[in-house]
Amino acid sequence: MQQEPYDVLAFYLFTDIEDPHAEVAKHKVFFANRDITSRIYISYQGINAQMSGLRKDTEAYIAWMRQDERFRDIDFKIHTHHEQAFPRATVKFRKQLVALDHDASPYQGGVHVKPAEWKRMLEEKTSNTILLDVRNDYEWKIGHFEGAIKPRLDMFRLFPQYVQELKEEYDPATTRVMMYCTGGIRCELYSALMKEEGFQHVYQLEGGVIRYGLEEGDQQWQGKLFVFDDRLAVPLAEETMPISTCHSCDAHSDTYYNCANMDCNALFLSCPTCAETLGGCCSKRCQEAPRIRAWKELQGKRPKPFRRKHLCAND
Image (spheres, rainbow, N blue to C red):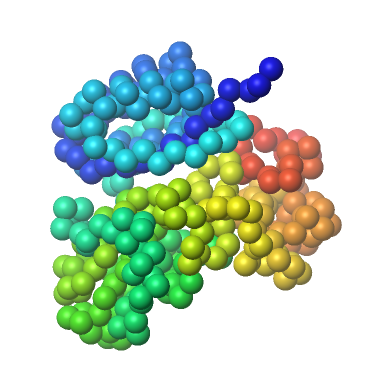
């Protein structure tokens, strides 16, 4: 019997929500008797979400959302997967949809560029253009657009400070800024901040790298795309060679593990050999720690992130 497919959805929308707590409650009621898992955040400014479910249930959800005028224009980016991509259905209120600690308006951001136009802009990019990747370092390591700049930041709450540094290197009046992120939501605010700081020519990839991959494949892209669910890394088109390397031996690998030391839990890249040698730990020091997860039976070819339910082998 053929297994029914699961859809993995990524979407967001900035829209005024008078009572986000009520929206959280409505979502929980809708999900109650459906085969859906999720990580959904709802605020007064809108919704930021990823979810997965049986196709009949995700289609019902999309139809349900489109009945509400506030959510009618959501761009649902959809991949197919063989199983659920999240451990549970999580729907929460969040004060900020994007952690920026700056009052930037998503309605004052850069020019939205569709994937086909973005591809053309990449092909015609000149020295007067900066291609800015506003994702985290662990996302960048396994895949990014050719020629992209990774901001020198430990956390993106410091992005306003980084923009000040860019202004010293580039002329805001003449420099063309092309900005991208995973699904598009970070760019809505980061591009607005850049415009506030005087950058006049700011463009953002509409729908992020997810939408680009669905429409244009891996043209001008290197490696895989990091995603915030059990898949961790997905190719934009066909399976591709890793551009990242193992944390321990520098062999090519784009497989992420959580350190089996429960008191570390660091996300790190490893080849299968080093993962086996270190028992799923990121270092020999962690391998000797007192609280080690029984990682072997939990790992497959593509290990999933560890769950709270994953017990320590020594307990």
